[in-house]
Image 1 (cartoon, rainbow, N blue to C red):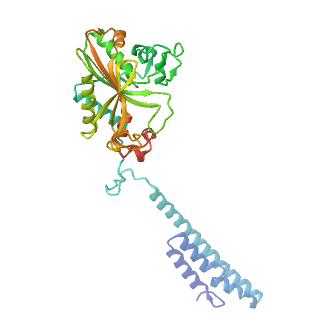
Image 2: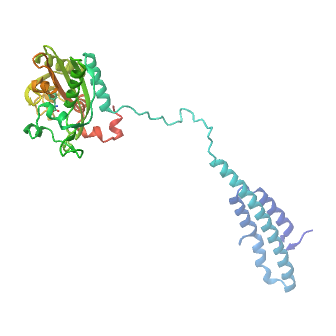
Image 3: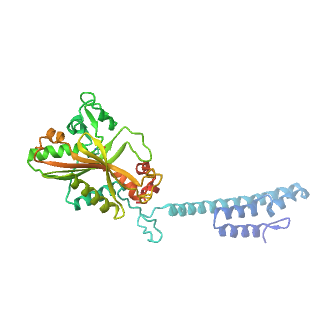
Amino acid sequence: MGVTVGTLDLDAYVGAADAAIRAASSTDALDAVAAEYLGKKSQLALVQRTFGSLSDEEKRTAGAALQQVRSTLDGAISGRREALAAAERLEQLEADRLDLTEVVPAQVRRPLRRGHQHLISQTQAELEDVFVGMGFTVADGPEVETDWYNFEALNIPPAHPARGMWDTFYLELGDPETVVLRTHTSPVQVHLMEEAVANNTLPIHAVMPGRCFRRDTPDARHLHTFHQIEGLVIDEGITFTDLAGVIQTFTTAYFGPAMSSRLRPAFFPFTEPSAEFEITCAICQGAGCRTCSQTGWIELGGCGMVDPAVLDAVGIDATRYSGFAFGFGIDRCAQMRYQIADMRALVENDLRFVEQF
Ligand code: PHE
């Protein structure tokens, strides 16, 4: 028969508490068991509160017995607590473990985003394809040029008023205003003609795409860094009709049969006669809209018959050879083809824009 204090059978109490402690499967559950058997509202605490009616002797015996129960249960609880905490730590470790062999099923996996060529590069490649299909070769040249290639060999001497057509970035290399970021792709014409003369490989039928730079404030139709594609044909018996035919053939090949081209008189120091070439406005199909200022036409670039002064500058016999040249904006082509309201979107690298093409 165990010790009884008041109405509490201590052995039975300890037995029940022990069973509950062993059954607690988490530290939270164990906290609840501890409160139930040792807390302020436990039977143990209630019995203790009835001690007032006992004699001193009885108090001492009963108090010692209850203290014994407390320390037994305290010991059992902290033992169980350690075991549970160790198990929980292990569980956490297991949960945190990175399984490097894990295979994520395809339907759960986030699709990998594959990059692709920027619209400008795509457009450049397509334009090259169109011209290669017409028998042109593709060439390129440096983005940094001397004044000779960018201007002088193109019949634009220093201080010539026509230089105002190109707001130029100068580089601080050598004498002031002698090295420039090319303002157009026309200097590549000069390189090609010089090489053809040096290697005796005339005629020339080539296009030259590339990046150009001008001190322009960017707006909906202009960028300070933009792309042009230059065309150059130097051969015997080349006439303006050949130029017009190439421009028209190109226009329908790239923009489709609904689009036409037209030439309007213009001035460039390196071509004579010169023209601006315009295509049907893609936004309104020629009907007239705000983008084309109600004209139905959009200017794409310049062109003309190579000025004999340019042939002279590179040592080509202008009495035997003639040729034509043209140059137009690649970015402008993309803008027309895809009806991009503001050209600055091409260089802002906003994925929501870039991924549409
Ligand atoms: N280089 C000229 C420009 O950028 C365009 C052009 C090229 C004009 C070839 C005529 C011939 O403005």
